[in-house]
Length: 168
Image (cartoon, rainbow, N blue to C red; front, side, top):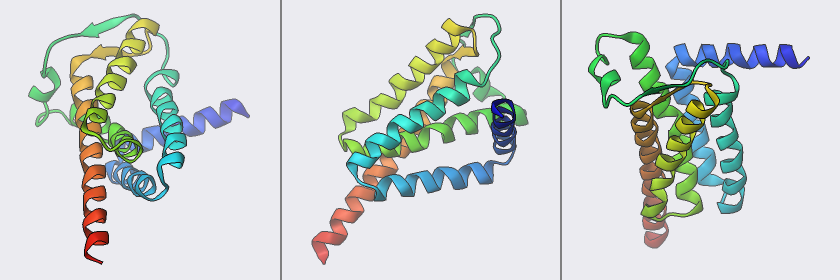
């Protein structure tokens, strides 16, 4: 049963990585959930979502060899010419948008916006240490960008909600 379950999850991940509209819909749904469920439930959602990130970036990969790529913006240089890299960058950005949104609802302070950067670095470091992926500076940049987008959107939501309440 576990093998069947793991294969089903892998197929879902493969599908989502090639169908960005569905992935975008999931990101939007997670954003909406995070802005409506309150601080305490967002703390639970944060733990769950970090586990999802760890599953997608570490646990679901085969062990290989320790690899590191410190070339800054190498993947962005090929963004327009390489469909695979374009999908990978977009997936990395999208993966961290809900994280930023959730964090904005737990602690709406701009210093909290740095947490996705630290979490991304931690994930990349774990990929290197465990040999379950490639430590890449570009991934940290993409993940951080996603986290910052999610955080900014969450803060914008809070700002707009406060303006509506004040006017009412």
